[in-house]
Image 1: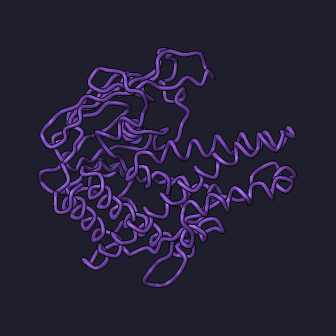
Image 2 (image 1 turned 90 degrees about the vertical axis):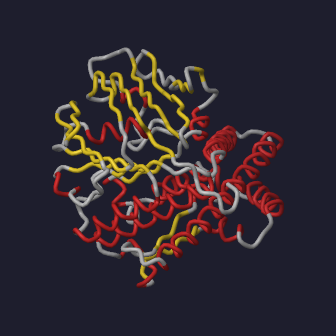
Length: 384
């Protein structure tokens, strides 16, 4: 996006589901930026958010196998379709899985304006999605792999090519581990390791660049007097320490040499023990200079919300379009002041946000222009 240009406003204006989770069929229209989905636990609120999250590369906010998304007692697959409006222009996008045999691992299909798309990455040309779910509340205290996936999702919404780079790196790691186990010739290993070094360095540099940009937005958000605490972000690991000190070409050579020298060690371990696939995202409570993992549950939730809000700002600035946010049970653990601050910040950012909650009172501070829907047993009714 050119400097000084405002991002294009992007909104999901209609959503249609077929045999998704507990929905046999559903069609909804939306006209507001802030949308609240209200209903008891188990009614299908998160299923709606999951359906929207499938309109981007990956397996959605639950990371479920595509076959598992199909409504129970149905073998015809599932489908999600939406109308996306960007700066007044409309685009129909859709994805789904045709009827398949259980366990076949079939890939989903993606269509844009009725035509087949070559891959799910094409969806990123039309919208960028961010989400927060209750499962992410343990992000700072859970395994490093969860934080890497969180980081890679942040990078993907800024850099659409990142998902393919990560997939290529993982594929090459699997190939190298298999070749080591089979005792393949050094020539075969040299070829795979050369490709692996290239992809690994590209992944590491993309992560480092996104974290630097995001940190700048977090600090700017704090300077504006945000109600949510500022986080300090860094990527930790021996490989990532070298990223800040070496040009990419030198790092590729260095990593290729390291892979060659550690073949015996990695063969004994059954896996590759060095590289960006072992990196971690370090998060601190900046004002207290304290690791986020040692902060209170409420502080961790507030830190995570602050990161997502700053990232939404970053995505808008870098992609030229406002992202859509999916915020599952977002208001339940916020005090009234922070709830009101969250709604005000979402409105200021100009993003569209879909939020869920069990109590209508949680959303009483939403702007008058917002929409509220009641979700009960897979049925959705507009309120007011």
